[in-house]
Length: 67
Length: 157
Image (cartoon, rainbow over all chains, first blue to last red; front, top):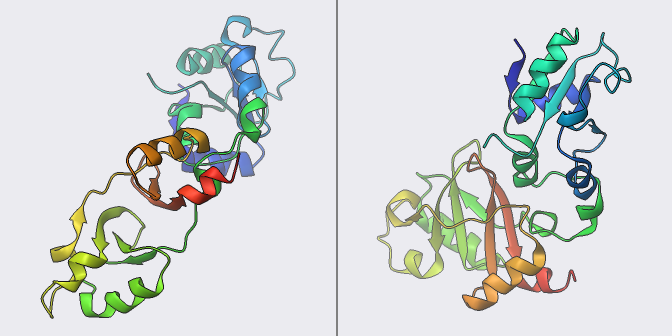
């Protein structure tokens, strides 16, 4: 079960080299995204689009908010 | 969206998956930098100053008066040791306070604050409409970020 995290833990994971992925549509990603975040829109999240991610590395996903 | 994405990654064989549930809105609200088209738009957080006098609940007023008079603002902000904003102390209230009063008996509790990702243009308009010259910024957790001045907001465009 993926862990739900807050900002402090996100910062720790980023510092430790985790991949950060924004799963919003491309347009929203282009407007603003977390520094260094990749964009894999949820509608295109599959084995092919995630092949670029290192499975041995932690990965953090985010969208706009919890609502 | 992100919970479903996190779940899908787990089914694709990823073993260390995290879901930053508060999301981009939370990141922006903390005044943290972003990349992208919006990165160059001036925000309140980017113009925040940390030169406001801060104090604790039990700090004596007689010690605070002089500090506030020397500061650029006509008020001090009352916070916890961890920086959570609790109140505002105006110069006018301190002048009439009892000699042995402390911050918590004189302060206005729960001052209005603004999110750090508010654009400079929007906040400037809001301040002008209300005839205000400063805005207090805080994080979603209530931690004080700083104070933004109307002059800085208007000069950022």
